[in-house]
Length: 316
Image 1 (cartoon, helix red, strand yellow):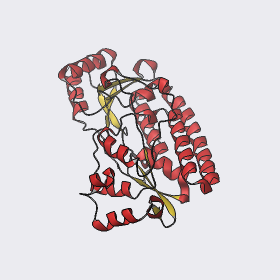
Image 2 (cartoon, one colour; image 1 turned 90 degrees about the vertical axis):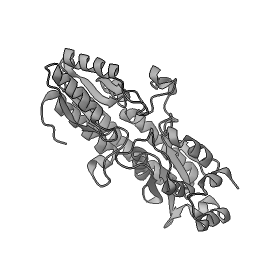
Image 3 (cartoon, helix red, strand yellow; image 1 turned 45 degrees about the horizontal axis):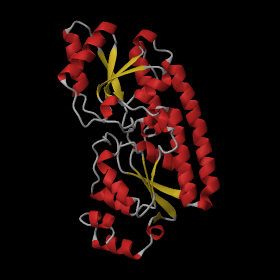
Image 4 (cartoon, one colour; image 1 turned 120 degrees about the vertical axis):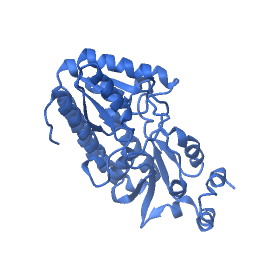
């Protein structure tokens, strides 16, 4: 038996295994004629839905509030992967706890890292991340445009009959993302330079900072697998007080207790730093809301940051 199915056996019904054993992937991986595609994080699922259109059925593994650094495949995930014609994931060790499953899945159906087209010489390599790249590339919109191109090309390779559909959908989406990138640049410039500092729970926003000219200070490292120490908290508190940074931000996929501890420590030193709001970092918002799309998530984050650091209410 193929080793992926040995790993999946505790999760799958006998009927499902029998169907897989007797059918090629292309025969089982369709929903009402659409190609069944599975993606790990919501930002990738959004790309697949936009580029694939009516030709694909896009299914995501990780929903709102889920931390992909720590996420492990569950029974339902294995079933989705087993029925997928192609799987898209971020790569760069973002889905570290799923690495073995994704590797084994590649022997059955294609698994594609959407970050493959990004020039790796331009990726960030924080010293605390053990020689690995920072995986949070979606916060540089121009990098995420290259992820769209990778999804487009993989779908065309899989389904040549849909070539014109995938190219047209991708082109339209890339135009929207180009406009989004320009909008982010304009909005960030509204923040006074001396407080153009983004304080968050972990370092998910370094690509955002580099691309759009805002300094980033994260309490934890790139991965959420380790907790921030007392010394880390104290160093950040000292900087906030010294520079009079008006706000810090919590993240929807990270417990907010760490930022609340920073806020309390800052107040004990006589400076009132606000919690400026919640940012989406490793996961998007609820389906059906503006924040449940990549563009809506980025707009929410930027409006929240600008509003808190300028003291103005910012409307979407």
